[in-house]
Image 1 (cartoon, each protein chain N blue to C red):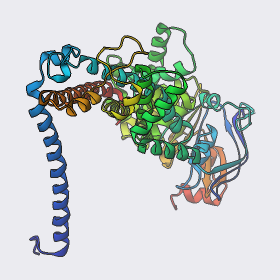
Image 2: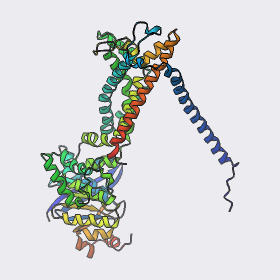
Image 3: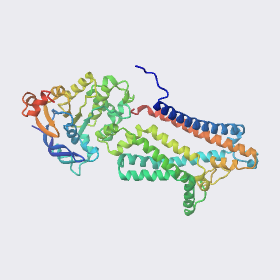
Image 4: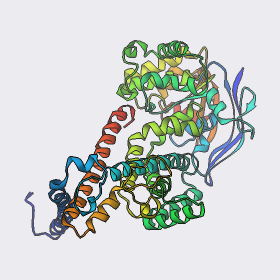
Length: 251
Length: 289
């Protein structure tokens, strides 16, 4: 297995409370990895350690290593903005920036100086809106505020905005939980299309979504990693008793 | 069931009592404002002539003869605009710094506390401070010294007003920008200022209003003259002092002109308020609600 993210002896604390207990895991490249488990099991916390969002919560502490492309993102000399450029995030609820639809997508390209001139920005914005499946709906209203879009459209805009930064990894923190069924399906099919080029890690609390998306599965319980493996194996033949109970819907 | 309201039940009586107090307070405030406007209008309007706003005082103006207070109008606009500009240049960075780097830190609390203390200092103290500073620099009463004194008066008001607004920045929005690999500075400059622009403008306006109406800080620093300043080193008149000097006059015509000057000052403040409200609502388009 070609690992894109490697987690080594990771412990995470909120204050004195241990939220992640000695996690060791490798996340495969260009596949969709789904982290699942009951609420409060630490799945979002684990996800947040991949783009160094964990440290945005006050009074937190972390020990261990998270390696992206073999480099520990918690090293002292690491530039956190470079980490977040490579590891993009699709949040639970879409939060468009206070600017136009066009500028939302162009924002990331601008701060990282990814394009040279106006024309290149235009083609860039179009390209990523097309990938996110939003171009046809917004091509005539690019200068309108991003908040004028529906929630489902906003989430696709956030996807386009995230991809425009040219990440290698996409994190999704329950990215469809605020959306209606049709919009959710839309996002899911985008993610399935994108997995050839991007390593994707999704947190979800719905088992069905996990089954639809996952190539690789991580099951967590009370801050511990219980089981991880290729989706087929885990779903059809879970090794651990807890996983089996979870898959059967016992808790 | 009986849903009929029991008007004499204790808790309903308490509600009625509190509501009455609130209404009385509202009436007192609203009627004082009305009274102020009425006084200025009824006494100022008759003596508000075209000459008042287009001419500088001529010989004998202060005895009720010809001339106007264009010197004070222009002087006040110069003073308040200059002071506000300097205050913006200093306030916005401080407010953004507090948001981006010192949000809930001890250090941030100290900065806020000292700004609050500065806010509470009477403006005559700033005037005296500006005067001492001016003397030690070998300056004389001038537009520049007045602008500096007003900037000092406005700075804490503007910074705290902006800070309070910027503090209400939604966390989600900030995180969205951080997730794209923004530095905290980029978040502050490109996202926070845009989202909070209407509030920031309100803060600027509040400080401008305080600045243009302040008499004590410019009393020693800007001086008073019948001429319109042509350089930063000239002394300059101002509207609050024009009001003050004319109201103290033994001539009734001049006293009436004091009210007219107050009316002009009020109109300027209102115009600036409405103007910036309008501007803020135009810029409001992209903010995330």
